[in-house]
Image (cartoon, rainbow over all chains, first blue to last red; front, top):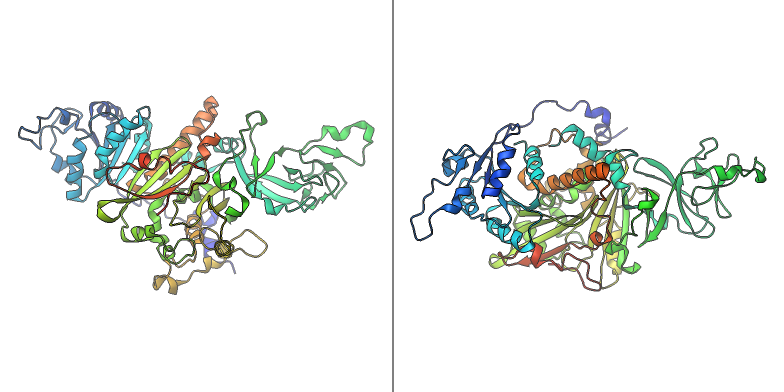
Length: 169
Length: 428
């Protein structure tokens, strides 16, 4: 008699697989960490997404020097320029994807990453810049490494789109 | 998830398909050299990339890989007589050489030259490192011979096996770049299997089941780094190599031989899983070789006389629920290879990737698909040769090492990730 494993792995049996949704869309926050990355996500936002939202932290680089009081607000915004609260955004996220450009400052990643850890939110860092030198790429990766459970280096702009689609964002 | 058309593109490798076109850019392992052990030995049926072929070794030791069927009436030449520098069809005596050229049609006058107008499709077949490799693309684009390190070390330092895997190549290959399953599916084997046990790295694997990952594009494919906590704030890194389209090298453990795989499509529903183990600096020991023959490590025991695993879907992979319950194996299936294969085959011949729910730690798989799709498009539309064809992309190694937290693996392990003659793999 044919075994259950043999019978159940045929093409014929595949027809009887349940054809119903097996997940709900995840809330994915895609945050650009610098001005160049912001341009990339401005193109991505035009595509149809389920529950992805796009933010920018590129203003972080313009924050006051360390000697001056630091503010948790004012540097995170949506792409229309409306200021967003980091804690609120993280609280409503299932996954935070930080996009950085090799050679640019990714320091905002540390605050975002720590907030994600505090809230138990998964983080992914993605560093763009296939043409960047090893040293430049490495520096940016180093800024994101402690705060990204998954870190991807060298992806191109298309990769972000493919990754977000793959994650059902 | 993938769209259906993307899934179709990645999983179909027959003639005329984009991925088939891409696979036909590479030298592919076709059969073990031991399958054609001597001149005039019996021919062997080979199906690869959905093409039915026949391999044989003629009177002069030349290897041939030709269309399986006689040009006359379509008889399988597997029944042929391998004699006097050619393979003769037993039906009417037509005879072919290793290039598929018909060299004799007994019913026709020799002077007519009829046989010169008959030629079967054929591919080159060359021996390297105990493997017979074939190249199935256009002759004018034939690349240099493969330079994978396991196939270039002395014969006594390498062990190669193959097994039938009854599912599409892609879902099998994706298992090879999915580092996060080791702490679960294979946890029972890490401290038990003679080709794995005793490594300090096993402890890191077993005590930290939530690794951090880093996926970095390499010239030939990807480095997939998995980072776990080690002592004193340091990190234990395991760096897997994936070279396009279907090669992976698993990071080493202690001074055990290093292993890896090729996944070569037979057709769209089956593939050959090739598994190798090798040492760079010393011969494999008697004990190691015995363990490999016994199906330990990444190898399997066979149904006698075949390359089908002894544990297979017809016997429910010899599922042992008591061993599963007792924690001896995590899935109830014995052995690393069959633990992987049983689950990959359970997905069905071709998994429906429109239904899957990938998570962030699956970025290695997502990136591999992205690179394959991109390379197939560039090849089909612009004729750009894909990564992995260049032998320089093949001279790579996996590595396992402990690094301070501020050191990126790609730089710290730069030398360790490349072939260094007579230098052992970097391992923990």
